[in-house]
Amino acid sequence: MRLVSLSEVLPGEPVTNADMAARFGLHERWLDAMTGNRTRYFCRPDGPPGVPRSTSDLATAAGEQALLRSGLDPASLDFVILTTASPDHLMPATVNLVADRLGLNDIPTFQLTSGCAGALQGLYTARALLAAGELRRGLVIGADTCRNLWPSDGAIAQLRPAEMVSFALFGDGAGAAVVDAGTDGPGLVVEHLFTRTVGKGRSPAQIVRWYGAEGAPTVSGPRGEPTREAMSEEDYKAIEQHVPEAARAILDELVAVTGWPADDVEHLLIPQLNGVMTEKIRRYLGVRPEQAVSCVADTGNNGNALPFIQLNRAMRRIAAGTGVGGRLLVTTVESSKWVLTGMALRHRPEEADDVR
Image (cartoon, rainbow, N blue to C red):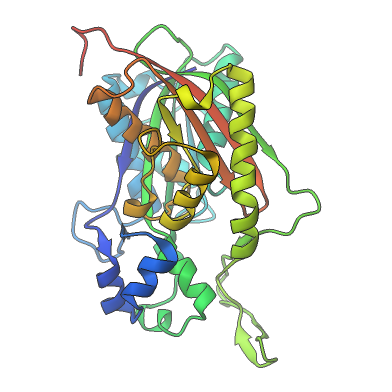
């Protein structure tokens, strides 16, 4: 499978830590120290015209951008896959809203519910569809709008510290790839791709709830007092302990399968939890700064979009002359129920007279 083109979409203007402090009553220095994220982006239901307001808006924009960059007719697509943890509705599936807006009809569509592993799970599914031989080309999109899952601005200031950290980590965004069964053209050729759950007998390290019309149920608080159940929970100790180890296992497997020494790989895309954790993982893995392709400190953790954004930024580096014709290793860890995904790709340069 070949990634013909890539895209990324971030809604509106970047929201700085100073903006977060002023708007939600958070502390700027605390945000800097705890997350390492400088900015993030949020969809706003009341945002200005032309700025994405929802997951379907983001996914459609990312799909349009990837198709435009590919130079291909949307009618040439044989399928669409959307991965997201934050669909617009339970039904209809957001992927079908996106397909409609892209002018697509009479093709298979798939929507996968996942978190950080979703982008590679979507690409894994696409690769299997292409390998079956009936389909030749597809569009894979990852998009999330976590801002829509949070309480009102005023209520955010009342969150417990653990909940507040979660809020500060995340952001909204989308990315996409046009994929093709042929490997002869320019783009990124997938050499190896895997996804697997390793969560048997392990507690989730991340939970995001989605309540119905009745809202969050009342549960017992830390001191036994009645309180509303939190929209999200993160076990940061488990994440800090196990994610670097998991990233090491993924990288070791990719190196073993491809025979590419990690020190020689031009572009290493490591897990993007937040700026602080990503830097810790980089050092733990022994990845040199010039090898690492990271974005979370500027984009926030936008879940299913992140690997596409990393890949898109790797292609920017390549377009600027760094690592042309080189290799890429992608490692993602989803701590919600412990899913490991990895991908190895090789850049196939465009012909000199075919640069778009």
